[in-house]
Length: 496
Ligand code: NAD
Image (cartoon, rainbow, N blue to C red; front, side, top):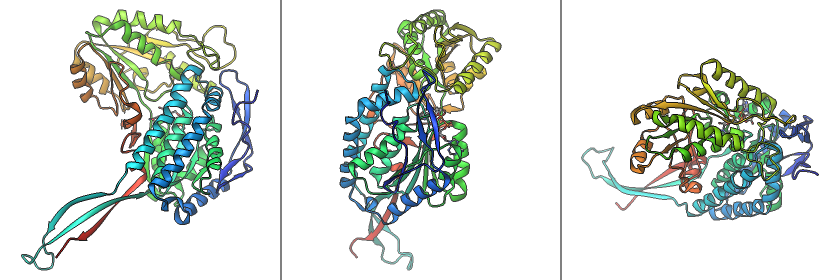
């Protein structure tokens, strides 16, 4: 059976499909280790041509000159076309990423589309801003007649955007770049992870289907070299990146000589605080389940469980029991809760961290190995460590696998101090019977979001992003488009 979209054999730029000049690369299903298709790989010349097409479309094409409403209509067409392909997109993601089907439909496809639909609404409501009238002194004759004036702030598209994305939620990450960039009037070149090229190329099919003008959305494939070109080329105005902290730092350095705007969504090591008054059973069950989502390959997943000392034994026992019940196996099976890691290299990395945890004196309460009976695929067990101290490597580094660390605390102040003792600041969570106290604690956590008592709030309308080394800038929410816009102030006199 052919997986949807894996028959795409060309890259897309300047409104046309092109044979890949750098050949093809096999894309592997991480659950079966079988090759699902040979993906096209763009050459350096093709990346160059894609940037040229985006520049031309920005400088001379209709897209930046259309009204906000016209662009929103077009992006709405895109959203509808993507919705119509929901089932196929989910099938592709299960095969490319290995994410369990039950999670894929909601979190990898439906939620991203809801975010896009919300952004379309915001784009339609966008307006120029009139600042209050101001009285300014006479610069030419101090003490002379002053003038009054007004200012209107207009928002204009930032220009040509390079978008570079990781593999773990590929449709979401790609959509999170394409959606706001297009709504703002930018043109872009997107380069996805080489592990998940088809989750990006499908957008080119949709661009064609809806009649997006040539050069507005260009999709090239490849790895580090192609990504570097997108960061260094002087025709590019902005780089938006979702991926690891280390690559984020490289991207900043690569973009520095041409002073591009850089927008980064990076890694995390988020803390879940379980206060003494919390329902320990439900907190532990939630913690163990959440680390299994997409086999722990989620930037915002809380992986440090800060648990009040009086609850720690019960928390560890329940987390181990729940983790042991999570069905691991072929993610295409709807009864499966957790699929594999993306590649053998990622599994080796996770196993290396597990070894480091054991040798540092942390105690395995469940997992730590490979699940029995799964000879093919990059599977790993859901793993929970107890007796972890926050200075251990496993408590400081982003493991990007289903591994949780239990760290004890005795006071709220200590819990907050440990939560903030991380170079990351992406997300956080608090479980408590005293929601008001939990809210006060959330205010003290240095992270871009905090979930109180499992709340997901109005997720489709909230800005998300990182403090510290988890990123620069925000995605989603009412200000999403601003990342892709310049503000221009136009001053004028009012009366005489
Ligand atoms: P990665 O950093 O290894 O790669 C991401 C992309 O960068 C790929 O397309 C890769 O080809 C490209 N790349 C690598 N080196 C480059 C360079 N020097 N110049 C330009 N491009 C380059 O990330 P990954 O392993 O695919 O994804 C996992 C990471 O992404 C984790 O750290 C995770 O926390 C993070 N992530 C963050 C968010 C967020 O919103 N904050 C969301 C999802 C994933």
